[in-house]
Amino acid sequence: MTRIIPHFVGGSLITPKDGRFGDVYDPSTGAVQARVPLASEGEVRRVIDDAAVAQPGWAATNPQKRARVLMRFLDLVHRDMDDLARLLSSEHGKTFDDAKGDIQRGLEVIEFAVGAPHLLKGEFSTEAGTGIDVYSMRQPLGVVAGITPFNFPAMIPLWKAGPAIAAGNAFVLKPSERDPSVPVRLAELFLEAGLPAGVFNVVHGDKEAVDTLLTDDRIKAVGFVGSTPIAEYIYTTATAHGKRAQCFGGAKNHMIVMPDADLEQVADALIGSGYGSAGERCMAISVAVPVGEETADALAAKLTERVAQLKVGPSLADGVDYGPLVSRAAVERVEDYIQQGVDAGATLLADGRGFAVDGHEEGFYLGPTLFDQVTTDMSIYREEIFGPVLVIARAHDYEEALAMASDHEFGNGVAIFTRDGDAARDFTARVNVGMVGVNVPIPVPIAYFTFGGWKKSGFGDLNQHGADAFRFYTKTKTVTSRWPAHGVREGASFVIPTMH
Ligand code: NAD
Image (cartoon, rainbow, N blue to C red; front, side, top):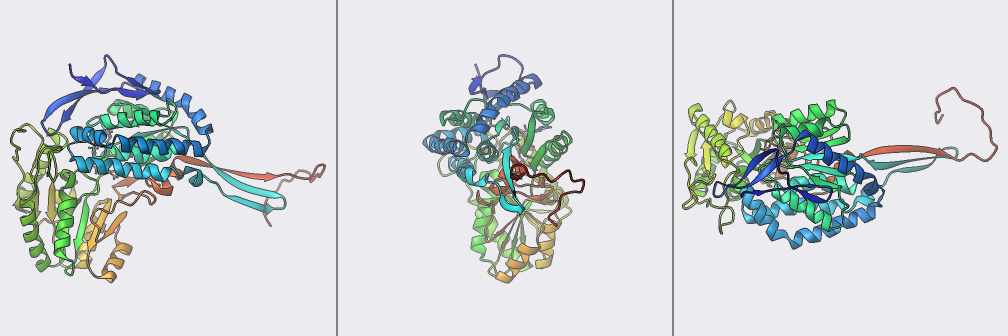
């Protein structure tokens, strides 16, 4: 009997007996290791029912007590870190250490959300008019939803849930159906930490479940991360149904390599950020833009040498640089892109197709792939590949490199490597991209800043984590208050009050 991964609803594990199911693979072996239920509309509505019942009591719990639940949750996740990381690796395919990083980056947002009592404070003005005080308060929205991608099955659910829960909302998570186990474990740990049943729920599913969340009136906000076409669909559908939405999509992150950059550092940075997690990161560098032919030739030679040394293998094996991709379909999609690059005339310096690991021949592996002489009209430049494929797109000068990153339809992350402060400063000011690294290849902002891409990488007006998350998950109420002395009568006024 194949194991079934349960939903987590109203504080309990729920294993449906019938309905639709999907397969969950172990990408390292290619075998089906479990089945995940795909919730029907009715099942999702019942989850929202439970969340709606739990939310008012949680909102009425003072913010300091809510924060203490998050503090206990941090301890519990640290207690179970290795088990969680192994579970995550076994469904996603990233290495054990990288899985721990996935969890840790999520915990950092929980640490930030522990500051909720401070972050939820309103503003106050005394004597805004004679005897008039004005103040504002931040109130939770009610029941909110998160719809998350496969590539960070711990981090992104926690980025959404931490601030939402700390602010007094109830949360319904619809995680990726490809690696759904870790979110369920996180829900169990929240319960163990003292979160009331029904405040954090996990419902598995596909489009049917998502569409129910997008159209049910009781869901007040939707936080999404995934591919751009789905991000756009979620944003337009959720907002058309009167919800707040913040939806983050795909990426094509460039790294500009100036002629004065330290090429050893650049090569290390490109190898780690291009091939780490098999390139399945929204902040992976997928385009290297060396400035000038000399820089490009030297960089291409260094990368070719390094790529040949990369070790690819099962996610839990020792000494592996990156593991398998998430699915057979992902391998086929990336291999198709490699062929498109060859057909378009790019120079293939390393070809990862047909890569197999001894004893794991059915695993979803792909060797590291490197292209040179890639031009901006090629699909391997324009589209997100989301695999271990790095392309070198040469620029004649700095202005051309800047324009390439700025004009690309995606605008998630970008980096510049240089020893020249003037160039770096100009670049950070002018580049049309949401997150910028200066000699930092994966500029994922720390938890108390906000994370969000521009252009086709992000839809909505508030970013994830940092102060924006608390703005997103709360509504502001503003109170104008006066306590006139007893018996004072001013009569009715028909003119709009001003502070004239
Ligand atoms: P995906 O868009 O396929 O799936 C994301 C979520 O949407 C999943 O929960 C999935 O079940 C749901 N979904 C899929 N198809 C749907 C449909 N037709 N209708 C409704 N819901 C649907 O993305 P993925 O493959 O899981 O994740 C990889 C993508 O996520 C990449 O494009 C990557 O760049 C992006 N990503 C972006 C960020 C960011 O912050 N910008 C972070 C991580 C990943």
